[in-house]
Image (cartoon, rainbow, N blue to C red; front, side, top):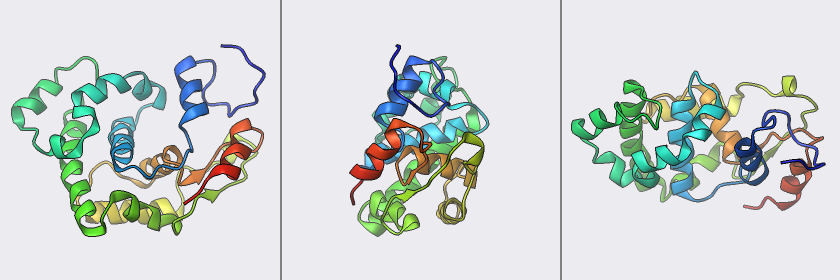
Length: 195
């Protein structure tokens, strides 16, 4: 895929990463199923590269009931055991178990706040935080918002939700616009975000 668009550097020349960057990363999410998908994927990203997770995304969708938290809460030890043998996903026992735990905590938040979206957008005062990064090294691994999110999610029973993972989640779900200012998506998202 060759074009003359100026992008963030992290997708490199990987077609799947470029597609994700161009069409999803940083686009504000308001759909609870999509939020749960990003939570699942970011759980498995912990300690690994996003590229590895993204290339297994379809297998994760199949393994985790198309990211339906209600169905995931019903996973028993037999299902969890079978997922530990699923070569299509990252077969980390703790992360698989954490995803089932997180599904229950996710549903509890929906009950309390009406939707996960209404809960999670509180951490940025219901608006996209627009940053102005010139180079990759400017982008922080965590922020006070991701610190607060991490603490609150942990208090609510979530696992694998450290501040760095929460910040990656915020970037993916568009709570922040962390495209470099030289990236063509920066201005598009800056103009088009709404809440």
